[in-house]
Image 1 (tube, helix red, strand yellow):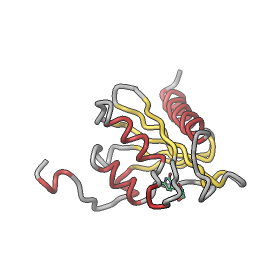
Image 2 (image 1 turned 135 degrees about the horizontal axis):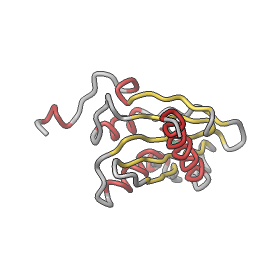
Image 3 (image 1 turned 90 degrees about the vertical axis):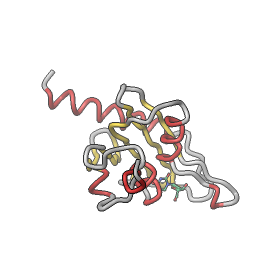
Image 4 (image 1 turned 60 degrees about the horizontal axis):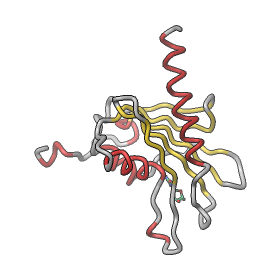
Length: 145
Ligand code: THU
């Protein structure tokens, strides 16, 4: 398999896992369903979906669900995240991570290296670094870590 094909296949696979996670989204208030799949450096994948609440502010985004699952199980080294989203009554969207999720990811990764895949489908996605999404970021280094 060529390097390019191998690269495409892990990205396609991660987006597929994000789409599967999206099927578990609990979004009765916004109707906007999101799924994420977070790839750890050791190859493990943690998935997440958005989980809304009758008390709206208690909602949690898909990306943070995935990060918190991973960190709470001892993972802190991440390579990439795939995010998929869209209204449950409409077409898929390019669901870019919200500002809070960008900052939560920033805590654990090198923004120049970490890859964000925002996909409508496994063959229709945009790829960028976290640094592109969160330039001039504030991170653990600013506090001496
Ligand atoms: N949402 C996410 O899950 N991730 C994001 O990065 C943006 C927004 C969710 C939160 C809420 O349940 C719904 O999308 C509408 O904001």
